[in-house]
Length: 269
Image 1 (cartoon, rainbow, N blue to C red):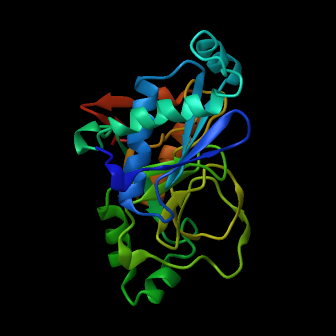
Image 2 (cartoon, rainbow, N blue to C red):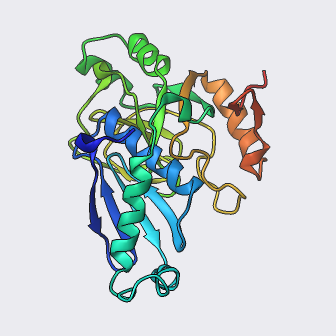
């Protein structure tokens, strides 16, 4: 539960949204509270609620002021001026009853195949040298961890992942690349992430996945959602090309199979 010591700070965000800030740093406690608040708002949306957009330590809540006003006009004489205050009161009430127990976490685990190093991960050797470890150890550390999608941002479908082992935390590249291929798996500071589209970028690229992370025409455009758990599976270049060819023929991300809570893409042998 959120106690008094954990009270979130609420701020207006334009005339039709508010920002709930749970902290100032990237840390599991704040990220967990953000995800918990999203679950509560989506389970019990208030009149006028549109969507909740999470980040590492804050949550933007968008609402329709007119609908909120209509829900208040017979209850309060100052309904027109009280829209924002009413939304804040509702959000505070929801947060006060919000549990952040692990049982509330999603059971969706997405396995992402990754070809590490070489042309797929041009910064892997340098990253391993920076930490004075072998390339195989760096891959084992990265693939051995379980990550959580903290938020989607930067580009459509780009997942920011918490859970990177501390031994792999690496500063961004001094000079960003003008073009990073879609599917590139990167590290920047204590963050892990994957490039959903071909864009410029300054993250350290250690591998690439053949899975399409964003398809605008699909029923579910983004492969990953905030709160999903992610594991990486090392694959060979030959397997990469095989899966890339298969993915190119797939038109719907929902063609992946769900097996016991695991969203399993690319498990055929």
